[in-house]
Amino acid sequence: MNFLEERILKDGIVKEGNVLKVDSFLNHQMDIDLFNQIGEEFKKRFEGKKIDKILTIEASGIGIACIVAQHFHVPVVFAKKAKSINLEGEMYVAEVESFTHKTKNQVIVAQKFLNEGEHVLLIDDFLANGCALQGLIQLVNQAGAEVEGIGIVIEKGFQTGGRVIRNMGYQLESLAIVESMDSEKNEIHFREQ
Ligand code: G4P
Ligand code: NA
Ligand code: NA
Image 1: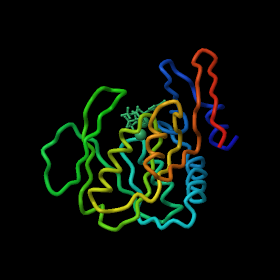
Image 2: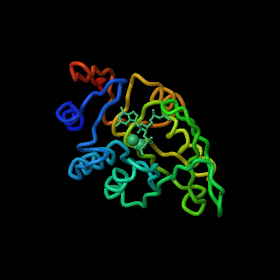
Image 3: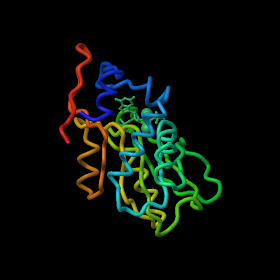
Image 4: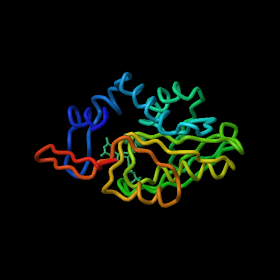
């Protein structure tokens, strides 16, 4: 078991509906020493890859991406979520449908912060159905930039996102892949990696 899986077992709480609460260390209160370990691990897993920029999505991705970026020494750009906005200025826009919330949203990023030919590492806290990630990939493609890799902290392996993204040919690295959870016993099983 790796450092993150150990932490999830120690402090993660399984809620009904296959929701894993990790807000004491990941996406509300944030353990920055843990984030640094996460950054170090991504640096290892993407060793030898040329990374010019990290792209994430608000809100929970931002803190993680910032600490990860200290290990890559590159800027972080975060995509913004919007509910059908009037587009001012030059933005890339992708439509994102959430299975979970049954809503349609847009994710946007200013064109000046994603450029043709750039090598981009995508970072996010969770991967479930992968809709947000698909939106980020679209933004990178619109820019003529390249997705060099995808780093996810926790993947819910029993949802479809991971399989779909790997089948698209991307190097997707998830530091913990939850295979199943039980809210009554507060039990979590990880995929062997
Ligand atoms: P999708 O259907 O649109 O693909 O979305 P998905 O279910 O993958 O995730 C919807 C939101 O819920 C995302 O956050 C995601 O990070 C979060 N999420 C999904 N499963 C879990 C879980 O088990 N535990 C926790 N803590 N979060 C989960 P978001 O809406 O983008 O919001 P933000 O928190 O990043 O602002
Ligand atoms: Na997120
Ligand atoms: Na989230």
